[in-house]
Length: 467
Figure 1 (tube, rainbow, N blue to C red):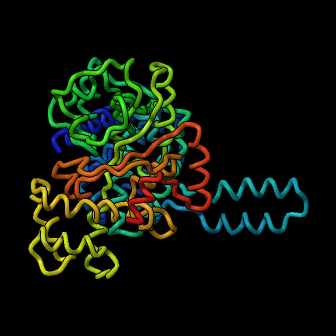
Figure 2: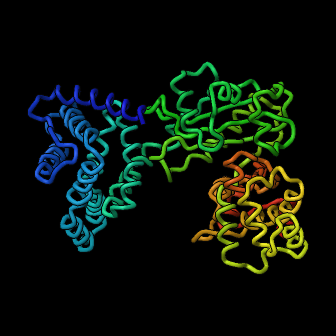
Figure 3: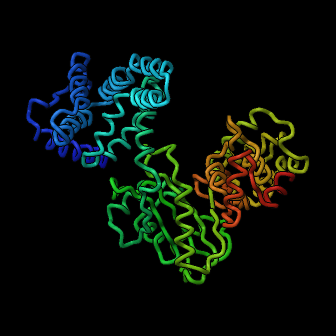
């Protein structure tokens, strides 16, 4: 929070400096909660930005005045500000209706093309022009990325703001085309400010210390990130890679700072063990698949001995799904042999009650009898969850599975107790999965999944499902 406040303070100062170059008459002196009687000042400034009088310098000054005023509002004030954008700066519906009528009544193709262009222009909300003006400001693109993250939260309670969030997403999609992005390998010699952000944004396996981060940047490790030219010090998405021999099955082993270093040239496998989206405001703007492809290409070029590219991935929704499934009382959930073993290990009369009691206790991982009783049912149920549990639209319920299957991976291997951290036990009862990126099959798998929802799985996953 302190870093965020410092960032806002810095932007506000810089933008105030730009705004003041345009004259004090343009200043917006607003109360933090933007009371109703001050909303007209905001509308006036927004209209001034749209009129584009005075050229690019004046437009930049007006946008800076607007942005600086927004940054100094509190949450309630920002909601009111954004509601003005939503309600007063949308499309001119009369102009749209007239363009439609003109198009329909046009008698020749040349006239129709002209009215079609006019219709497209009139369909664009006025606020899109306002949002684009921030591109000219220092940190303006980052401001809009963070603004969308804020809008996504606000729109859950204030549905009128959803349209502004959607418009802002469209602006960002055009700006964050993968062709504009730069792939960088980060090392221990990279700027400390960037490495600090990697530690802050790591969302899969939290970075505990500088020594932990240094270990993840060792000679048998790789860390790649996408950057945008207008946000050169802000990683957008990054992937952490371990160079190993054979397919890894335990993340604690990969993160062990005391493990011996491997000569990268001797490794035959690249394990993608963490992929983190660093900017909440870019949610739904997909470039993760391009990241993986570019990283694979870079690794193959530098380390030609690499033959296997796979992940060691969490299964974040498994325990939640399992708890809900147990609550529903599915009589076919457990097999007869599993029921007896669970009763003995838990001391419970009911097998499903015993399963839940063992999992809720958390100490089962240190009890051999409990581990033995849980292994078969949990591995089978995890395979069932990954391949059968679906969201609306028939995509897998598990978000990590959807991501990798969309990118052409195959479900390769479930790993028992692959992550015994507190987070791993809570999310997936300690299990992890390898998704295999077999280069010759990536496009075929991608088309099968995207086309008809086919999930490509290994023989191990198929066997586990059958039990």
